[in-house]
Length: 462
Image (cartoon, rainbow, N blue to C red; front, side, top):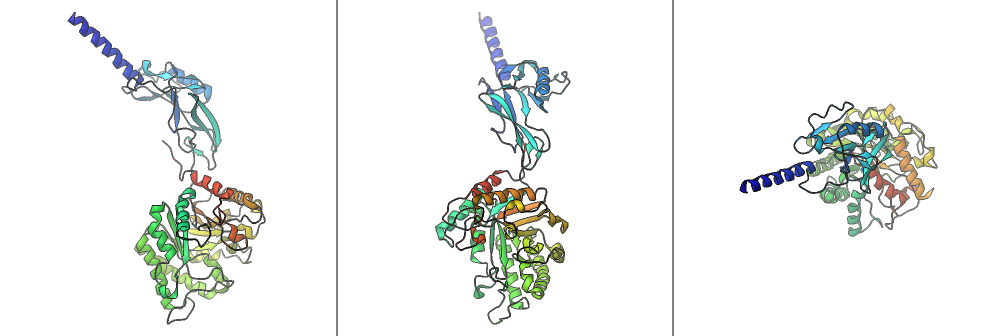
């Protein structure tokens, strides 16, 4: 009898062992449908599989032909690994046929026959997902194209300037603004005049210092910028006079020294990814041509010094695009500046406010932004873009975002930042370009920009 018990135990164990291998889930039942990317994730190439019907691998080909599936894999269990199946049914020699569950209807796709997300063409994705215990698919139009079974992600970073509600705001309101940046971007535009006072020339401005100190806590990357002239002045008057040296232009050697000192302190203290050494600098040329030319020569020196200390920092100046085009407030093109600054621009960075010249976003010409590539082959970025909610309301802002994305399609862009998180107090379109009202209420544009941020930067696959 002992021999009989031994034989019985061996048989039972063999059966249990076979079941474990067969299910590959340690006696746990296999799910009726499994989605590797967790649902409708258009930016990750996933697959669905289930455990509804078990058939032989050759049936995978029937399923492939019937539902136009590009790739099907058979997961043959822990002992035999994975084998792909193509139009030749004989490619199953390394698969234990007893362990290959398949599904033969749209609502019961594939067991261990994996149905991968596939690009129908360069712009559309067939996305597989589970619902009601079975596999389903839908077609999705990818905003930036479809490659390798997934939508192409954003090719550029996005961000916003963290202007708080009730500007100038209190400490709590600034904290909230910094915290909210991560909802709508990877980046934050942090720009300031190069000094908080004449006495503090050479020191890091408080706005930049605060952002540089705490940006890791708030989970954003700053795009720093310092500037040497008054952008609110009709004649763009400079801030270059010094204590003991009242000369208010770039011939002031003390100002040159302190300006560079400020840039190097930002560089050495924060090792920034981005650092602009002037903001909308082409505007300064309008009333200060000779001094502008002098600055271009100094910029070469400033750039070299910063790159020596922070070689990975992208150093640039920003240009006002509408002014450079000679539209709106200015009637002469300034594209020559891009060549004049030469190789010392690590990025060609613009601000853009086409509302200056167009009453609605739909009026923006198709080549409005692609024209830039006629004048430079460098990577492009936008440190500020915006449209107000004054004329056309919140809908106009959303329309501008969509129009901007359409008009810039195909451009090699590093980042795109919206001008203000919140509206500013004051009258005029520029003050109402925030993604939120000055009382903190979100506009429709906030949710549209947030949706843009939720598109993965760079895409992805499994």
